[in-house]
Length: 114
Length: 118
Image (cartoon, rainbow over all chains, first blue to last red; front, side, top):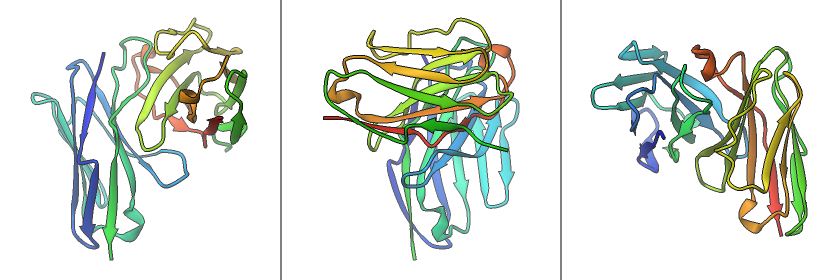
């Protein structure tokens, strides 16, 4: 089955700096890669996603890049703000494949230092 | 509109007892998923329902776990003879359609049920 590795497990950056979180996946058939943000005690919420037919997607301060050859995808947050502090999860899934849900990475705790 | 809801929000039970967790998906969503999140960990996929199709139960951790869904509405996750390692937050999600449809739709998560087995 699919395996998703996520790094780093904790990331501390100064407010205003950029943050980058990286994930790798094992199954080359995976074709959808969402990123979820989970604040303490709250449900995961989708912040951005990318499909395998594009290499990059941007939404204001957030961007995601995908390298299908290397099976890497990354989340980039620019001009970080205190409200960006949360745990971020990457995930992968094969749409049109089996009866599976998302395979998640173990999460990155992002800390924005004032 | 209303999002995914789950009940109860918290459940404390004694080891060996059975528990039933409930999920109400977003109306019109044909796909429903159950995940488990242990403290400080990522989400672990348990089971997926698509419409009236029989689910693949191979993701369930043991035969003490079972899940049902009535049509395209409410789902229940039942854990029999609970063990301490079952303690976790159980999250339900729904999407307009699921991966077996060949289409990609966002999964919306519920608030979860925090299960503590003492």
